[in-house]
View 1 (spheres, rainbow, N blue to C red):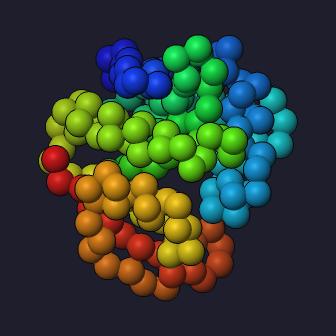
View 2 (tube, rainbow, N blue to C red; view 1 turned 45 degrees about the horizontal axis):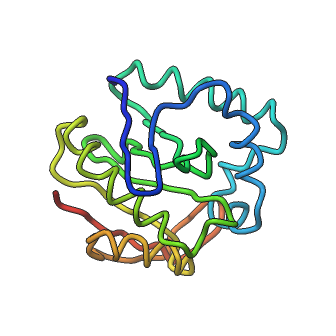
Length: 171
């Protein structure tokens, strides 16, 4: 995928580079990430480095996942937005923002900026947003970004049964 760089009033969304290993590691260690995104917790800088290296390679293929760091204008990496294959022909948006920046509207700002660009790049007209029902913050982000709830159901989520909400965004 061609180089991506999106600017908002507070943020820059761009490709990963090797300088970001430490921040990816540190951003992943809070309780909410452990609860809602346990497979995206990196217990060491080396674990984060391995994952980021893989994600950088994914920019070169047509299948993704396409994960982009969300940085403050000063360059501080505070999370990510992503588009991940969902089923055969669908894509899902995802995001994670460092704990100290949550509740500031940054996730909404990042997702709103990312959606039009990723829809064009993937040549798609819609994208899913999927989260656990008890992840109220994530549900609010999706709703503020014009995703509409399609359905919810109890299913296996990261190895345990949880109510899962399925939202759809149409560009």
